[in-house]
Amino acid sequence: MGATKTAHFPARQNQMAILFKALGHPARIAIMEYLIKVNTCICGDIVNELPLAQPTISQHLRELKNAGLITGNVEGNSICYCVDEKMIARVLAYFENVSGKIMKKNNCC
Amino acid sequence: MGATKTAHFPARQNQMAILFKALGHPARIAIMEYLIKVNTCICGDIVNELPLAQPTISQHLRELKNAGLITGNVEGNSICYCVDEKMIARVLAYFENVSGKIMKKNNCC
DNA sequence: AATCTTAATCGTAATATTGCAATATAACTT
DNA sequence: AAGTTATATTGCAATATTACGATTAAGATT
Image 1 (cartoon, protein in one colour):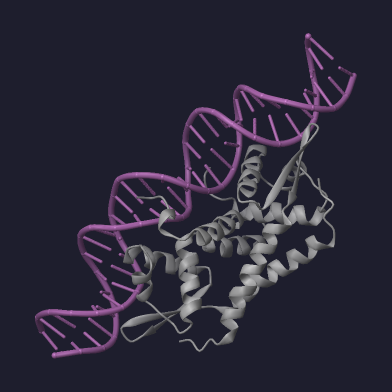
Image 2 (spheres, protein in one colour; image 1 turned 135 degrees about the horizontal axis):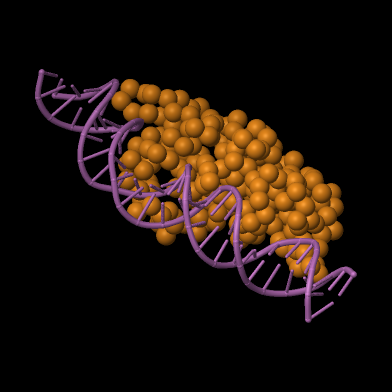
């Protein structure tokens, strides 16, 4: 006991959870927002931008990349990271769907 | 070391991270989706719906409530949980904003 | 080639999360 | 009041996450 019972849930729910989990840390929110702000891809600038050590940033970048939220392209010496629009669109679509279902009626307690 | 350096990030980013973190578990996604599906508020039915023990569900419900994603109202013997539309709307707005900023131009690597 | 720069990886300590059995609490039922 | 039902809390084991110093890997620069 202690590990998430991933196998007991449908793949779709697991996938959404992976996306949200990746966004569930202020450093990773900050990285995403910075990437969106500067648009053109950045790498080690993030280390200068955030109050965390380089290995920690690298670790957070890997998690965002594993979740599919960003991509990293080797560019000579450095690595160029950028937001993956498709994933953002996917999360947006999820909430639009959810939001629509709630709005229908919410005669709750 | 080991704890998130919350104090080093702006409150807004911390708040968004709390919301996403709460959604970052398949059981909590399942609970949210179930609540949305049945609309009218439910309590212990969730225990029958999901493959987790009652204390575990109770714990997940508390986390969703702490994040502000659901509300729980005492109704006689049982407790009636429901989705908080305001929070869903807030997350939706976040992604609409983010999505709009990305769409502008994404001439990335 | 020696050095510098950039970023990943390794190892590890501190802390958080997940899950559940056992127990507690609170309201309802008889 | 005693029993039932519904949910929360406690305590704990297993596992995951967070953060970083030290090191490594790989391309760039001199």
